[in-house]
Length: 310
Ligand SMILES: *[C@@H]1O[C@H](CO)[C@@H](O)[C@H](O)[C@H]1NC(C)=O
Ligand SMILES: *[C@@H]1O[C@H](CO)[C@@H](O)[C@H](O)[C@H]1NC(C)=O
Ligand SMILES: *[C@@H]1O[C@H](CO)[C@@H](O)[C@H](O)[C@H]1NC(C)=O
Image (cartoon, rainbow, N blue to C red; front, side):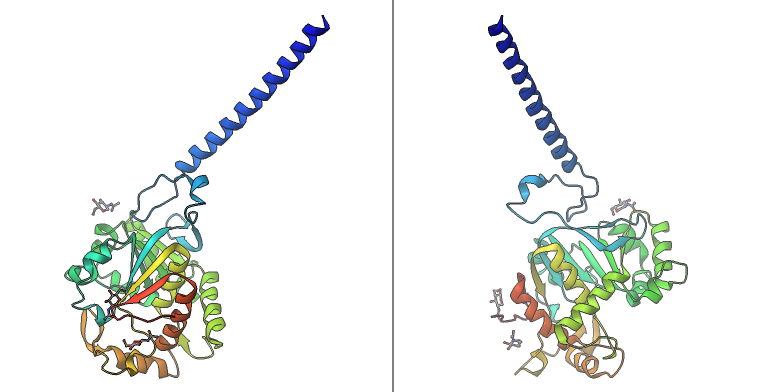
């Protein structure tokens, strides 16, 4: 009798143990499955992707949610995670570079404002994953909404601008335009930079240069906002067509237009004009000096023209 009792007792323990292990395994499987079909995860091509998150930690960074960028239609934060990012400058340096094919091989391709690809594919590539756009350039996109918001609706649009234009209470002139755009083009993926994130970008400028952006009478450039987001979202960054801080004073520099898609204005003239403007300028040259510092901490390379970073 006692033997049978002990045997039954250990059988009970075994059943409990096996049951517990089975329940744990079940929970783990459910968790993995939920992560796999997590609906908000976008990969760089705008499709939902299969990612086994618990195991990816050891191989690469986890997926990123960017709370400083909010979808105008859904009010959800931006989900973006890229391996190799190509950031294409709008500079005239891009003309005749013939790197379009190379650019199109990158996992994510970033462009700024209304920089076109149509007609320039050979030099700048065809694909656009993210387009970072200044509040002042939104009207330029709205000149061709069918192209930007229907034809290329896989592109993520990230708009930056000051609070007065971006406020959501009906008085933000640019925000209102974007709201109307997503009503007309429900497939458009348009995100606005939050006020908090805008302040953060100012703080970064102050930390890097020791200067207060507002007091120094300047505006940050779209390139600045692009690099800050890209450093969060990309594993590696390759910047094409951006000149460095000493380029315009270096021997035999190339005189090119400010934009590859617009003749006329000269790049270096524009840089000096902005750098020295007492009010309302972009500190392009100062920013480039900061970018060179960032490139020492992040994996960033600059080519066409090449920067030498030590
Ligand atoms: C998105 O773009 C594709 C290809 O250009 C088009 O067929 C589709 O209708 C667009 N979707 C929306 C919601 O506009
Ligand atoms: C610039 O860098 C690229 C890639 O690192 C290299 O292939 C190319 O030869 C360099 N060009 C010049 C002019 O140094
Ligand atoms: C900046 O650009 C100039 C002209 O291309 C080049 O000679 C110089 O080495 C570059 N400096 C750095 C630090 O990349």
